Length: 391
View 1 (cartoon, rainbow, N blue to C red):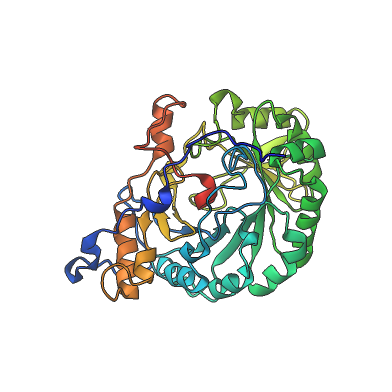
View 2 (cartoon, rainbow, N blue to C red):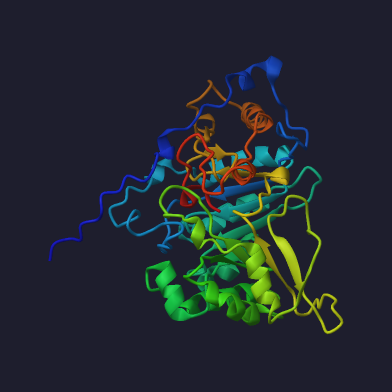
């Protein structure tokens, strides 16, 4: 039988070859930005969170992230030599930490597909914040490999995990991951992570109206009282391949309204500055937060911008620094750690480049979109794919 012919789709600007060079003045001793433990961008937002993509591959084909029509068996993934190796990642991460980063999240693609990921975790776990504390070191996964890897991840120094799970109904889940993967194996992975001490565990559910929004109540009931924090994420307009439409977005306020009909909730204070999720606690009979029942969160990525205190930077799997999830271009840091940039680039040069890039940051895509039409694309070009820099 002839091979299936895939639709001719040209969905991407190839961000893998469109990187910007770090500002040249970053390497001029007169303009050097030395790490001082804290740094702010042009809108006075500090740098606190670094998300590192370790692979552009995934074993799921979720339509909102890596649709099969685009990411088919012939898709040209990055060659291994183009990926940052673990020593390069750790070297870059060390300079981010010197600028004030306190949390590192490993993402993908699916990060557990990266061979020997435990070695990288062990290296990153050895870093210390400017206050001398261990980093908040976490990882986001689809859970498919978590059952077999949870204990080795914990032993390597990983502190906690976030698991993507878009429903408990097996037919719905298989349809959404589009590779016929069963939901019970992800649930086994979550249980293995709990047993390994990778907590508190968070579970992220992307809510798509008409596809899995009927799973809201079952998901909330399942994880209530389990110690797992369930978070509902509005279906986002990330990248150019997911066919995003506004009428498929279920606003967070409607999510809360539906939950409130059966599971009374009360709002909770943010746990830290720059937190993306609005927290809601399960209420007891007296209308107070029942800590034993736990909490849920909603991430209003479309209907309520949270750019104002965004403190996150993103490092792609091949060493491009992105300043926003909705960015169209990144800055090339790989050339510095591989000696292809300024001659004999030192750690001080690398730190200065990061400092200059962050200080010049003006990104506030979601705020600009909210001020206009939510359907409008206010970026300067096609946005980077979420599978390339992580969520």
